[in-house]
Length: 301
Image (tube, rainbow, N blue to C red):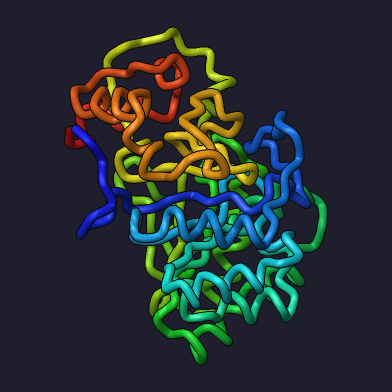
């Protein structure tokens, strides 16, 4: 069964990493072991052209902080020229005027702020200035881009009192800013999002172990969204089947060396995709991945 990029997109998202370097080091995000990589502008255009039409949107992130790339505003303009919808995930600490205006570009359809990153890196710092910068962005977005989806992402760790206190303080700030009342109790296994106002949402999730750090015993039964609803491209052009394969342990090919269509029709990619459809985990990284255990039997195959 070949995979093509004809009429309908193959994926919901393609993760295109523009830098694997981050200005923060979160405890829930392990360090990158591969060499530092920053995607040059000419390669960005080439890679985007290669994957264009294969997904509904492109996320400029795998590892690293996308707003830390000096050419981030240019990349957004290139995507707009090419008619590619973008989703941006950022820790929000680099919201300068240039980056903020770039995020207002109509090509950007969703912005995710990993708010927990600030609390995790600066547990004793006053978060008010940081929070105000996020709210300022929201105010401007509601004027310029009322169609823009904005997610505030938080870890929902009931057992972590310090983390939960930071969450609650942020929730109180949201209530004051947007004149809403929020119930802090949420079970992310059943419902991950809460609407704040317009297209602004709170998104909760719980921690997980990255696949390469997992202590799980290998298993062959299971399924996943990787290679089915999304695929990822590292800043050096390496293509991997999942956004959690941060070290390219399942290397499918490289966009600098072969067409994306050829990679999607490689034996290794098709074995992974078809294995998930049959409820089988064919790669060792998948067999020890804790994240895939969340799906259980609920993921349609």
